Amino acid sequence: MGYNDNLVKKRNGSYVLKHKTKKHKEGECEDCGFNPTDSVFGGVFRYKKDDMLLVRNHMEEHLTFYSHTKTITPIWCDTCQTLKQYRCTLDTTRKDLKS
Image (tube, rainbow, N blue to C red; front, side, top):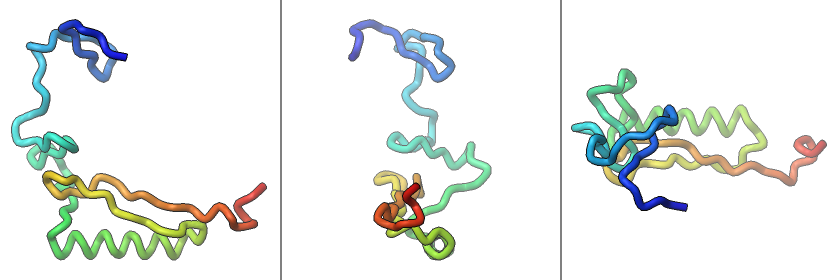
């Protein structure tokens, strides 16, 4: 449901006029919102060897530690190639998961 007015709702619940807001900060990815200048962490990038080794190690540890996880897939931003999240598929047919 959308309204045809000049208001934009902010995260804290307040409203601002559209022309007084920016869609994104300068240097920020338009798709995921990653900004390398604001980030203390620095981000994990898809095509950096060290970052990809971190992602693969994390996935291996997760699959080893959580035996009810079938698969794990890293989700990358299409624009800046930073890691957005991991998507896990759980095995719901296991007897120890049912109550």
